[in-house]
Length: 283
Image 1 (cartoon, rainbow, N blue to C red):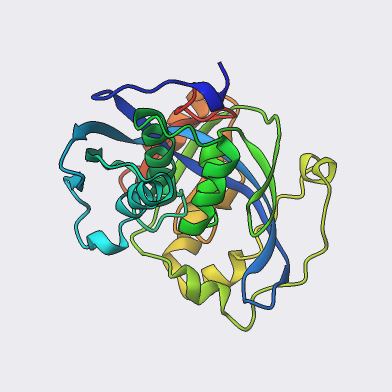
Image 2: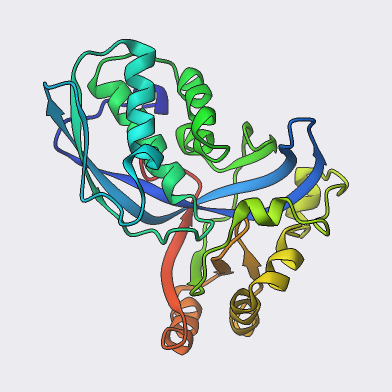
């Protein structure tokens, strides 16, 4: 069954998985200020969970809303309203959210929640929009939303929306979340951010070119992230995902990943998980 024709049901818990950026290069900037990127997305099995219940009133209701996030700014509600406007659907929905992904961590939690909302409601409301159309709608909500609708590990270009399926090694992952919240806008507007990296090929990435151009700027502004990278690098190559705050390392064995977590869990918020080339939403 392809992503496009998977059928979803009311009242079932569906995952909104995290993503990692395995590398991130900034190769230019458009006139509108958006940065042109090369990045590699891979999913992990760490997920938020969402349940969709019918609501004939026409209202979009989010239960257990996220503390500190107004409804008008909540990507879940914005996604449901966008789909409702696009399709003219007259009914509503009640959405229950189990939030596990840290806010402001660079794991794409809000974008993933929005993507799961679009994909599942497209099925439940019998809207029959194509995957491509859903990805176009998702881009209105954020540059990371389309990859979660795409549903496969991807080589990404443009502002992150030009996606090509890529097959990557699936490994154990240890993620550390420093106690800080990165302001992405601040990082991307920094004067000393590299904006002219040379484009690379997938072969060059596979050969080990995994730089994140945001890393030096992020570490300059957030000392805790630099410390987390240092601690994690004692066990495996430590990387920043997106603009952070989360850092991660890949491991070839579960035992090595567990050993690292046991050492670091008293100092950092840790998440032990596995990477996946196919989104858990479509698995």
